[in-house]
Length: 173
Image (cartoon, rainbow, N blue to C red; front, side):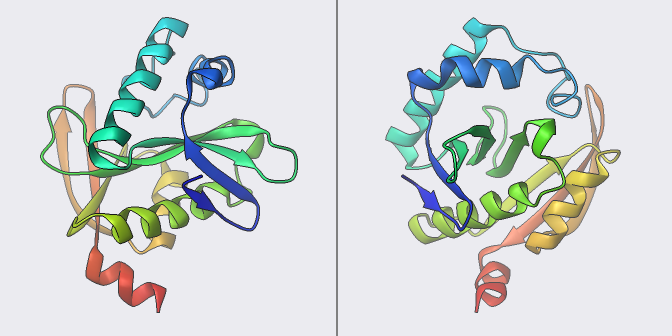
């Protein structure tokens, strides 16, 4: 168990999560703003779980599975990751559309940020978001992230939001 909140528990992905994780990653609506928006094949999700296991072994954090405490239902993922070509760590989260608008992203991300800042030396955590993804922008703003800049990548514009350790600690007092 990585994080426990009032309504959720967050834990490291395991290969036993493959079925439920693959369903989430096959949903084009859910993945609209993730990467290039293309749903992932089951084999890609299995590989992702293996990468998650390696990241946790090496760094102590990564992409994690999020479940409801009331019924042990897998509802999405949340984590702090470093993409292979990045020199920064970023907050990521994706949830089944059936639970959108219920505050789960904010709740899970709050717990994850507490966890990562408490066990790492990171000075900053970023969130990279498609500027059209207003729901996700709302989540990071609630968490205290501040707009940093916008850049173009191969897929279009990307808005960068930044949260410093100092900002986070001030917000949590």
